[in-house]
Image 1 (cartoon, rainbow, N blue to C red):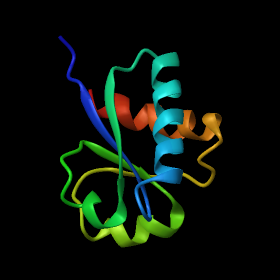
Image 2 (image 1 turned 30 degrees about the vertical axis):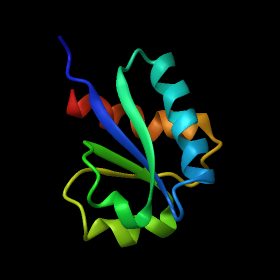
Image 3 (image 1 turned 90 degrees about the horizontal axis):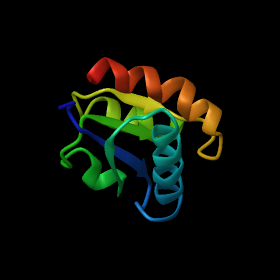
Length: 96
């Protein structure tokens, strides 16, 4: 059985934009047959949340980079499913 990847979608407060990013990641992964547990969180708790990979914005990427030892994916536009797919799918497949 394939490993189920734990993905974290991170924004400043862990509510609005990270939830939107989470839903879009779910859609992209479903389209690509990737079984992942995607949750959303705020920047403060992101470093302590158990995850295999984090998706976040350019602004928060730099803050998280020194706090986590897992792959970080920088997403410029949380609404752009093509960008999420282009950057996220290859990164996830490396973890499987």
